[in-house]
Image 1: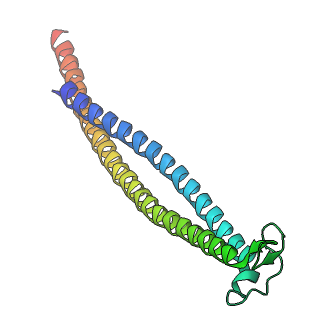
Image 2: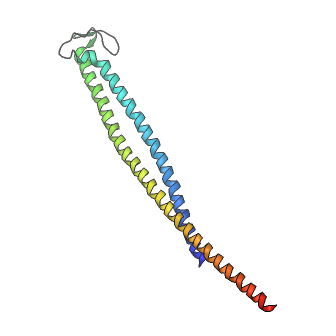
Image 3: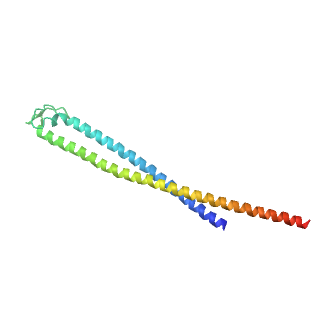
Length: 169
């Protein structure tokens, strides 16, 4: 009976340990995903800031064509065919800043989703840690209980032997 009970408890504890290791691996992978998305978010925000800075002079002059130099290629800006067209630059500015803002929003949304997944991984690891602890404590209690039973039985056997030896002399 002892061997069966101990084997079942050992198997249960071993399975919990395997689950725990797998959960820790998943948590580590999740942490790497969080690190990557944080880097992407930082990069996209930096790109957006750069875009805003690059087009700042043109944006402040959207209503007129006083801007004489293109902020990107440094060519002359004009309303005729001698250089960049002011309206073309305005369209390009709006498209680039709009795309950069959309990239930031998309990555922020991805960041929130990945952060939620990461929080779920953390909670899963904590749950499995509790399970492993419970199973290990139960295994230790049962092991100690059987150890005490065996010690009592060995003591009785020893006592019986001593009594038998005393009777045979």
